[in-house]
Image (cartoon, rainbow, N blue to C red):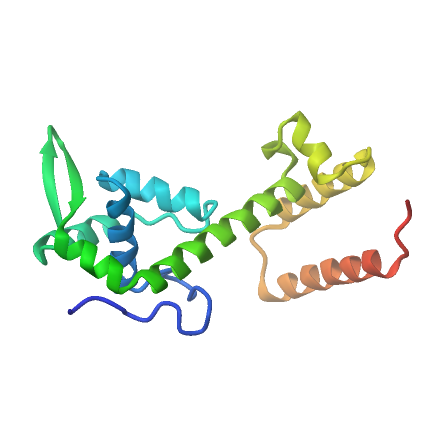
Length: 188
């Protein structure tokens, strides 16, 4: 069937730029519709949630994919006022069954990315944590480390945007700092 298996995952990860080939996105959408009927906006939010904000498809990506699924008989649409509710058809369910391993792999990667993004946010963005999340990331009182991390974040924001040379200089500083942190024996 034209449109499916456009080649997103050949190298084991997401490509730069577009996160999905059109066929892969269509299959993922079908799998989400197989769970329950959904509006286009719900699909956007669901993909954003599952990926921890890594992948937020635009309406200009989601709605053409939904239109394609409708035109090919894999999904059907029901008007609810000004909104459209999309449902998977029996043909769509067959596509999901035939491509279940790829869909599971893709959704699994999105969820693992989401978990990693949440972990990174907990460590590097104190504002995104509640009072109990700081203890989760740093069990002991590490206020000096938190203050230094916030200072680094502010310094990076102040210097942005940077040139290629400045980016190399900043990356070198950060790499040296990371290496120094890792070289020192861990103290209890």
